[in-house]
Length: 354
Image (cartoon, rainbow, N blue to C red; front, side, top):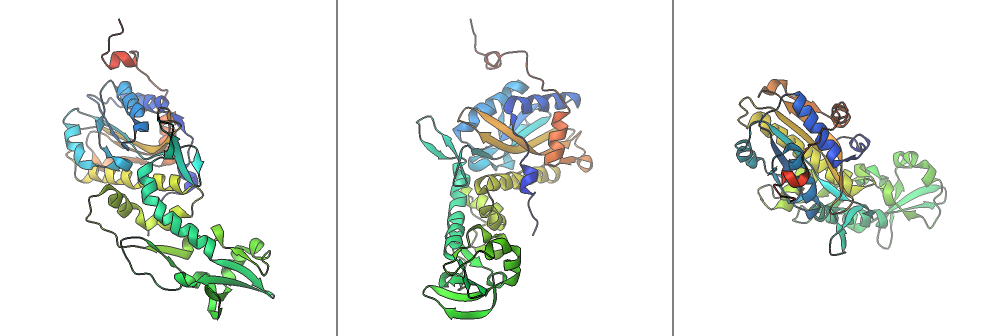
């Protein structure tokens, strides 16, 4: 299966919103974009509202929306968006709040409550994360004489059947060697895999008879999730789940699982968008510039952006389209000085200040 971009590659520096938009404006001016319609796919969360307004301010045109809750792309909205302008400048991606609490990004709402952000991505993630964390606490490593042992609860020894709700399927052969040595009160005891012991020898050497939970030594190679995915559902949570399900074991074992899910979701949606643009969209002679990345919500009003992906298509020439990875899109934007409007935001909004 294809692997998503490395965590370290996607964790580029966060940049102020207007700096990103100003550099995008400078780039599109250098490429002679005309009749620009700014377009955005983002979550419907209130924390994204000012960011969207500023995008329209920089391009002096209200933004057309391609996004739904959870920053789920609706590529069918591209056709009406294209009827409102000539060249398209598109920004989008997932968002996550700060601070992080137990691996989940949070933001303070205007009513004073602190809640997960993006809430939709958290709802997709939480069941998988709970299953993983429970397994990491229940599987036990210990020493018996001079040998290392692993105790596997019975619930992980039976192959789960795919159902509506996810279940964790353990790859037993990657954790144990040979048949079970004996039964314990809650499962079976095995010899610990020599490969596992070698990989984690510093920790394994410190085991005693009481032992310890396997915790984060249970990595993505040791299990998968089993679930009956409804690929025909149009419910937003189901659509997001279907898109990222194959990466869930890697997501829940990440140091920052909520952020990893947001990054992988952006990566998937970005390529859905560019595939649609190159294969199904009536381009004509349009110029199109896409920047995608993670929005960091410092509050419901203040954001910064981590640019991660880029796409440029000039004059409708599909075969000459350029794709930019995390380092490349940042290098491209950094080649330009941010250009901001001479008019005020209130003037852009048509509000008289007299």
